[in-house]
Image 1 (cartoon, rainbow, N blue to C red):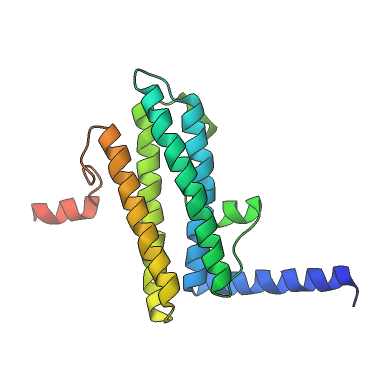
Image 2 (cartoon, helix red, strand yellow):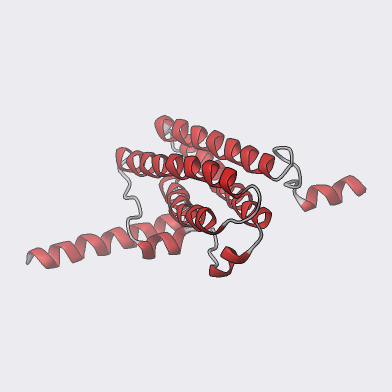
Length: 187
């Protein structure tokens, strides 16, 4: 077998395993969703930093710079933990686009500042759904180091939600309650 054929064979096996893991979720597969979410989140944070306007724009840019820096660190921590756990982290733009649950829109650069920040809050809430699923799977699979990092990631996401909600003049969870829960209160 040639070296190129060996490489192609390894990649094909990786893709087959990734497909199986995403159909019957594992902690690794779920964490790859988180990794992909943070790759896309990085792009979105930059978009806002570059295009935010208004009287608070410079303050927002300072906060965004710090979040971008920390998000880069989380991106690397997540990938390293996947490797430590014997998993293969997504490593291409196509994989990030396939596994993310966040949406990008070029039109977002024309939103007002509050609407821009609200997209980040919603992205972090969405990411937390995958983080909590990954935590549960890591616990079920008896992967305590994986679980510990994911719990820490959940805390970081929650802190960022509080920061961005604060910039919007809201409390940490204001407006984030599940609509279904609101319906239950009326009954």
